[in-house]
Image (tube, rainbow, N blue to C red; front, side, top):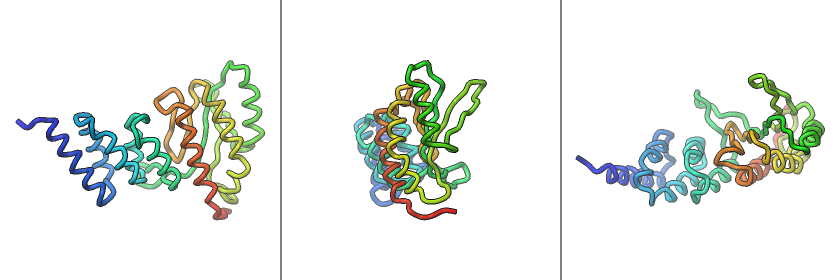
Length: 210
């Protein structure tokens, strides 16, 4: 009987070698993730290989690793800066967008946060009903004009709101189809890097849409 650790090591090394030549497929990314727990010394190497790939398959894999592993946050930052978005089930990419959704809070500052969100986002401010409970959402997405123009007008407000809403339980950040809950592993201080990456990408999008 073959030693599972030996087989896992061989799988990981084979896929790391392939990643130096060509992007790993989604299936290969998942094979690497399944094998690497038995080869913990190679987790960092796998994270760096996925980080360099910058596509939907590698981001999906990176999100299954703890963000404290070197290369994981850097990989997400690089992919978002490159405009990568999540792949739908049919293989088509999700639209580029940045959104924050959040619950009603008893925090003393909540009323002023809600007012600021309405003022800044206008028609892109939404009140939703989720399971009978109110939820609020603001965001920037592809629309008329240029993405760069939208971001230029709202970038500082987005970062300001994210910094404060990120302190409230239940807040979620959405970027290009991926979601990051502040109550999970991707806490608000880590999310800051992703928000800045997306805003940096959006600032380069000067194509006019009608």
